[in-house]
Image (cartoon, rainbow, N blue to C red; front, side, top):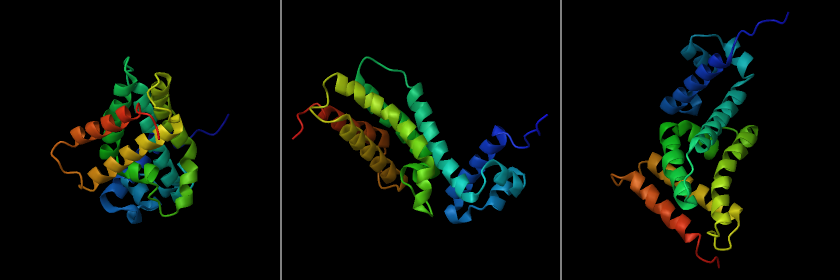
Length: 199
């Protein structure tokens, strides 16, 4: 009979939540294995058992962010209008994710890591999340609404706009009293502009 697992998925989730909260309130420098273990009421051995190292914990935070994005995009109900659905993905999925989980946004999307090479550890999760965006843009392409642009170029444009808007809002540089309206209008202009012929 195999040895029973001491630390399950519940422990892993609790450790990730604690790590996210520490970084959000005090920054990456405050994140240590001992501190995370203490916040959860467990031992450093539990952290090493689940993740292996502090670097692996940071990679897991990046993966957690992309898993959230992927799950939220997959859960979006599809309408008959691919333009509306793509705009909604930015406003109702990407924006709330960045605002509710700024640490995951910074670590995963913006790659704000002490060692940039760590981002390679969550590349697969990032690609899986991006597939949801590619599928939404692919519907525009199928409807002839990309004006000769490639799906790849349109995905990059949407991603860049969402990342930029999120960064501005998180820095409080986007203070209008109605940030959601700014997101919606910006995405509408971009996505509807795709239908115009590309130069």
